[in-house]
Image 1: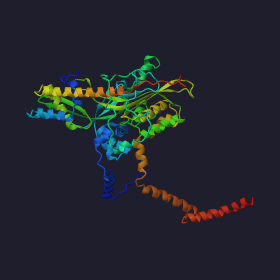
Image 2 (image 1 turned 60 degrees about the horizontal axis):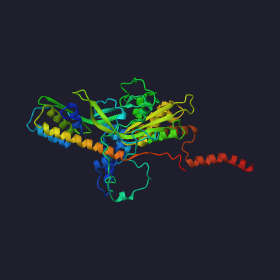
Image 3 (image 1 turned 120 degrees about the horizontal axis):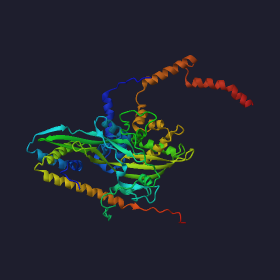
Image 4 (image 1 turned 90 degrees about the vertical axis):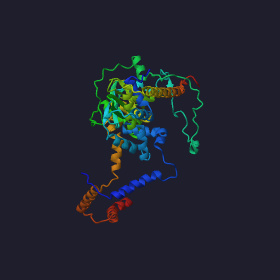
Length: 379
Length: 147
């Protein structure tokens, strides 16, 4: 069935949009500044950037403000904006080992080279509401820190490098991919290449990535990983300088990375390790870990479990796709519904039930059932 | 050591410099009304960030980065700049500054000094962030032997 357009008063639609804008301004509080969102709600702007597939912190803050905190709507705004822009170039592929990490924990290796650096986290504290925040900001708790001069940031040895140095991880063949699939420019075909899977997962919707990754842990899959490490930090963004030809750094992008070692011996004839990888814009450890599980699951290439089926995962993971399809259902479907009504009426006509209401039919049905009831009573 | 006289180093310094500083120098350079043509208008564009997956070393596209590039010709000397985000004024100012230093404009010493300061501030922030992170380094102990 095709779509049929409807028409309505443009002025009324504008009024509804105005009412939406008013909701942001309705309270007595000061209006939110984009800088405040950028500075203080980094997780929210990170999620919008990650799902929008566009690293632009200030515009992400603007999008969050405009969407009144709806992250998928904010990601949609970013994607719509990016679709109006030209692409300058692709960057040379950066080695994530170059990350300037501000946080790195390895659940797998207690004595990981470079150390376990907790960084900024509340992972090991109780989740209790801090009522002091109601009355304003508390003082900077790090103000009194006597921090040792550590010099320039060190390059932390990654667990992959560690495993490789011990011969536990093979040296890969030269990858046969110079120009990875770009799913923003070409549709994903199945079975997808791994680079397409990683790109789609990287811009997947956080809740969907988490839920599908969780499904594998809950028994709908074989992957229960040990995380080799989770890192948060900044990756250099480079271009080739048009005059000198040197690789030069334009900026650094905040990212979250997760790597997992996955023993996939259960239900398999060939016991082996597999690896899962997750990398996403901004601080979003939940998503990076979920992506890692899904990457490892998809590599098993099975139709048995949802998380191992690339087509299922990639068809459901994108926030714009799911948002669009789910929310389009609230738009006018009058012609569709009229057609359904016509069909049902025609069937009822044929069956001779046309014109009878629910009560009439119910009476007829109970009358037809009565002998059976009596028979049962007699029995 | 970063050298603001080196074109590649200068590119990186301009990219980190504050927009207001770049604009101030660009205005000073243009004060004498030198011939200026804009070879590339400052418009937001995209860079697709490629990353190498560490196990297979297979490149993939992580996502796009918003940048604003600009290119000018200032009295016969070309200048190019690219700054992060949507920042047309900073990009155009940066390209003018780049060309001015390449042409050894009379404001070059002041520009070089400002770029050096920007580099020092950036290095200081990076070192401070690293020191704070290291301050949270922990050694986990397993509790197998404890009752």
